[in-house]
Image (cartoon, rainbow, N blue to C red; front, side):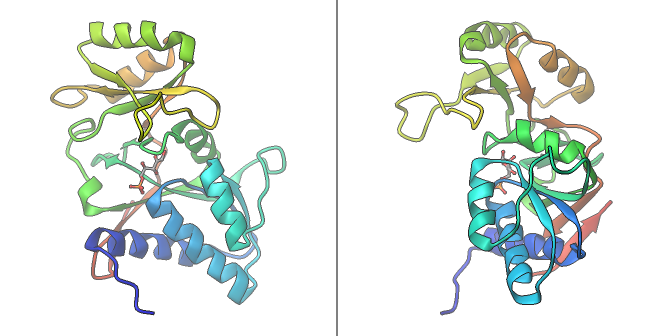
Length: 234
Ligand code: 5RP
């Protein structure tokens, strides 16, 4: 059956399939979370099943783990591997310096651990994710201990941010991460002046597990296009 995909999905699929094609036998991989990374996991699964490609993967979320298992990709943990050859993941914003905002899927804490252990961290996006300045489109997700949510919200407001606690789709309670934490989305009106300074400030707030600023981690960005072409930025 012919699949009917939107232009955005065709672009995500192109980026996902490109990174799956870059994978070499024996690689230890980081498997990202989100709709774009899912295209890569599915394409990788096809190579594992059809070519007998031997790789192992570390998933960045429960959702990525479930998908990878269904695709037949052998999984390991960070207790089994010291480093990763390549990790791939999506992003919400990519700056010209290849700094990122991640975390719409509330998986940024695990995603950052995995990306930080990878020799190559390949970011998969479509053109809509490229920005001149971080924070212009999306807020910064901050994973927080539930009992610390109010103090962190207050501190963020004092810094001039507009933070909100992320609620579930049915609005019946906060989104709960794989770690059992909550997520605050902090919008910075006009964008983020100094992402490095902000990252330090957020990381040192009591009760914050991690935030969605990924600075100096991406080595490659694959920008998928609706026509199937992929632009490689590094
Ligand atoms: C999840 C993430 C995602 O990778 C990011 O939100 C991009 O998602 P998508 O590919 O669905 O647009 O950071 O925590």
